[in-house]
Image (cartoon, rainbow, N blue to C red):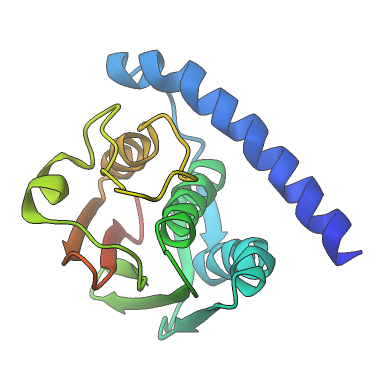
Length: 188
């Protein structure tokens, strides 16, 4: 049952990847409309964690989620927010050479919710950190040839977060992993 569930989720994710490629032009023109609704941020984050749990465990790693949210409800587009988190978790998993250790943390400060996704992957230099949110940019992976993608994921993440009046930042060092931090208003 667990494998069937993962296959089903991966099939959905593949469909969304195709959709992302098709939406790239739409994002450029800002011709999309968010479907805002009250969503439970903890449920979305834990769902994303569960979706990647088997992949991470198969590499001998672990993925955890810790919430310090007093009130987990925010107004956002559930579809796009899920894809933002899935994209970041997918990168955290695939840019790790050995056993991935991925930590998801959520907390709030005032009228904002914060989410950090920390990994022990290959990390990035300052130049890569400046470019990663550009469309079609891919971090050079050296001898890591199994990392596939279009270089659209983080461009999509940034565009969608900006549409939510949110922000994303990254702290990273080559060989020491990365921490992506998202700031979202609780009410749009």
